[in-house]
Length: 467
Image (cartoon, rainbow, N blue to C red):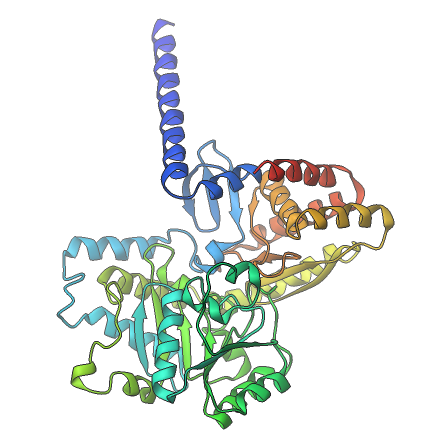
């Protein structure tokens, strides 16, 4: 008995040590990184400690298992910590080869570039590697300006094009506010409005038109029939480059290698990132035509006129190659198409009886569930009250309920707080898709029939008011 008692004491002391280390780490993050992010997670009751992540599953230190239906905003297409990607990176590390010499030919970069171009097709024959989607947008801006000799930039309304200087291509004061002055000669046209696009293009001053083939943060918006094809034709007519921002939609997220492939497009430039990393080593790639590339790197003295320190490092390139292996060998494009169809059909069936549940839309495993204001006076009064507190209040309660009560992680869209994302890793099983549908139906049922959902919103409002 004494032995068992001693072991229990030791175990308790070890647990106390873990808790204390976690507390110190949180304090360090708050002191030295981003205290507001920590406070926001606390307010939303989503501040958990993760022990390990595999596939679609997120294992917490307390033994609970969550399902990831956000995929790091479409980073984990191949799933968390895929064994093949891990082993490829481990092998690369053990090689102790040239990782960042900066004065050699990185053979892995050539291999990855060739495979990306083969998958992308069309006029895309050259690749510039970088570390993120933001860097990719920056490169596309510079390349388009050099190639066309123009400085103007156009983007589609609702875009979430990047989080740095490229905010000039985003509309919405929330994301742009306080970061000015932004890039001059930029304009935003409504997504789907060909007349507005042609009106701007007619002046001949725009180097490029940036558009997400399927808009992510704008609410998983699918383009109107024929819009993207006509937009591309207008750009060709007026000498403006057609740039597809595929940072979220690329690498089979929508079921095709590029979302552009659903619409028969041949962009002049395509921007990839997120899933190219395997969720492990940040990476981005800008694909373009030979003629655009040659207009930038036009001579020996301009061989390094635009570069990035980490752009072709061995670990990023190895991660990208391993990601392509997994996506191809496991046939995850076809799987995403089939899973997406199944998920949307089940969501429509289960949510159809509820007045606050609106359109379910998407392509592959990039999906959005739209919510709408209720008609019933009792529900509408509560809904409007919370929307006045903050427009994201309603959506965050849905997110919080899914997380806390059902063990599902997802998020609302950044530019449309009434749309919930459903974007799990492409390896998600039917059982996991069903768990998401059943969980969301339970939350929607609660918001229509009980007071707990709206009471939660009041509690959240009180906690937010203290921040």
